[in-house]
Length: 207
Length: 340
Image 1 (cartoon, chains in turn brown, blue):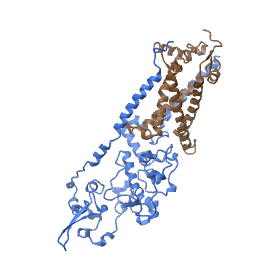
Image 2 (cartoon, rainbow over the protein chains, first blue to last red; image 1 turned 90 degrees about the horizontal axis):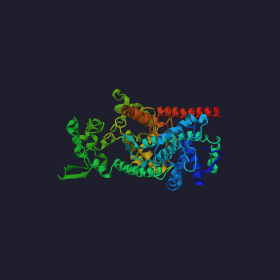
Image 3 (tube, one colour; image 1 turned 60 degrees about the horizontal axis):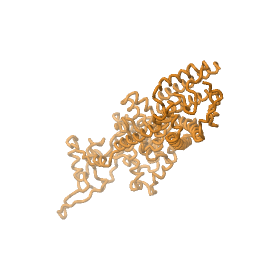
Image 4 (cartoon, helix red, strand yellow; image 1 turned 45 degrees about the vertical axis):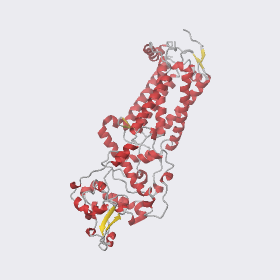
């Protein structure tokens, strides 16, 4: 199939705004989160300032996530996150082999972007795990840490607050790793910057 | 691709959230002791077998009157039996005394033998009372408790400086009820509550507070309004962590400092070099790791504060994962550029 110079309007305004806000919040949360995690007097962002910014950004992220969640429950965009079970592993393998071997042989992407499928199988599974797994966990545990009295006192021998803290940090770490990979994979487009431009003007350029 | 037959993951998450809320509520309600169980625990009578204590019979002579809220005697003039109320602070509770550290003592070990006559002679109330160091100082058996260090810390404290001789050990520690706590109690929250109640006995009760001053007692809740999650801090941290100089030992800090010298910076505790890493918490965490094994030790790490890095081992693991990710990305990028 030849996809030369094909353009699709894939990213409606609400998604682009949400994506931009989400990206900014994630950056702020990672930076302040790290400075709280490794806080030491005098070396990082002031602890109390980092905590305040982290709390505010976290609350905005919760709202933004709620909008994302509702949007993907009720708008057509939610369909992109549905993983068809049949043949899924085969498709995942195909995409993985493309990223590890095919891409260097200048092969065509096995699952080109079109109006019906915005994400390739690998993207799809990552985004589902991220947006419906780690993000809800980090939002819930975040609220648990903001209001420690709502967390359980103990759970299977662990202190409830320690466990909440641990889950929050684990989810934060995983999201940070996924974000690094996500930014890198965005350079795999028609040109290294075309995918970034798509998230501004809404049009995807096929390659 | 046909999507119609499949369910959006958001619906799945929504159902899971509902289930989670349900499970959470169940766990939450089961781990919060109901008022009924608290009441039952409080009402549980402590039956103490007095025959186990060699001085119990002798002590009963005193406790016959001082063991309850009223006492009876015969008035030699009127030949009538008189019942009077015992001053609350002169009542010694057997249940509490016989589980305290001083349970093996007889009353007259510390109080004058002359108390054996009734009515007690008026000048007896002038008798000098022994302080901790009078018995425990220089005793090898008690060396590990470092009473000398406690004494010198106390002498330097704001309590001692401001009130001199009036402020004695007994202001905070009752010789009749004192029971060792931090070293033997594995329940950290109980130890914290025990220690904080000592402070609150005066700083939370104007009657006791004004025994030493005519000043108006400051409102603790208002004074600590700046502290985020006040309730959590009050139940998880001892007053002395911020209000006393802590040494890196289990010795309970007695060098209580003036309010303007108290710790006010979040990062004093919430940091790698947390002041909480000294003293009680260090002791408790090392006990926990010893008892509960490597995995819990690894996950729960070396400090107990929320926020700062808990475990060096986990930090190293995450740094390795992060570095590997960046390495793979770089190799992939270089190969892409090469094959362009």
